[in-house]
Figure 1 (cartoon, rainbow, N blue to C red):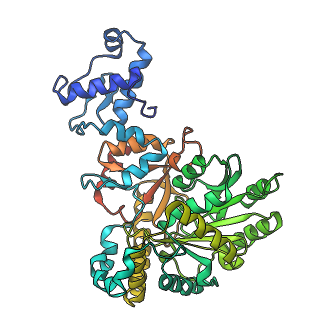
Figure 2: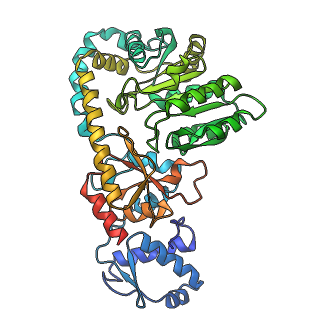
Figure 3: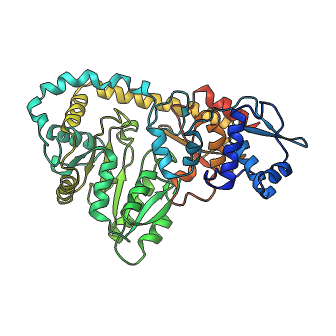
Length: 464
């Protein structure tokens, strides 16, 4: 079986790069037989096992193909060798890779690892349509820093939005942030000290893991099941002596597994938090894709032991960068102070833009269309993956992702390598785990992009 791509400064990595370069330069023509393992080991004065690993790497990259009893042959169609190509394959094995991939806009690649809906889903909230209305709300105020809590009219809108979820909050309990990631930063700065135990969903949001590691936290993974966190594992960790930990979780449309926490489990989690004096940080980044009445822990708790984080990056625009924190009033004031010390303020221009968008009755129709599109995309994506022989972790109705595995690929890193060679970028499951080294068979698929025929074609080639 092939092994994950190795760093380029190892002997294996150097030989992989050398042979790819020779193929690009025509030393080995498409369809030609490569020298034998014994011959290459003699030429490069290395062990035969090293050459075996080189061929495994090249096979996984789609550069060569083995033929039983005949050796290894150059594939007929070669993926272009670029300066960043080998690095991209290596970065598929670490946390930062996925963020780098999401910031690219290369139409040549189908980015199934992307975290956002297709752009055409958001066309009817194009930001340029709202600029003139933003200016009319008071251009003079746009030259200052604004309130430490954020733009008041938007907080009033958010208080109404939270009420639709059954969460009662005043404007003094809401702090606007530069997206959900800044909200997580502020909460971590307030609560977490080096060495503190912090509980997280696992698999879970890779950026949260990185933030906690930077803070020096001792991160404990709570296994994610198809109906939410493993409450028995959560209870064991909460019973541990010492400071009561934070628990970061996504109740709805969990990233990456797409699972929803059942109402029964939401009640149980809240009971455990009360009993052990823990604080729950509930990240609801996909709130606009779910029914307002869907079960949320913060709805049961009314922001006593919960901190609710929301965002509009998925439903409006990632470029707008508006998120928020809702919590009890005293904590909100403390978090607003931290925000002011670290970031001075969030962008009032962006906040006014979002306020204008929410003020337009068109937004409710937009989110209704998003939910319809997502429901249809989920049905089609699940059908396609099952046709290709995949096993689904769960079958959600409205989730941006699917968490699936293929029996032929017990290590999803190898699947990511094979797809990358065919210009399809996947998010292998190890990225979403605290320890990225062990083999993980699961991968995250963006349901809005699975309809692109390039994926099915690439998978059929690999599975053959």
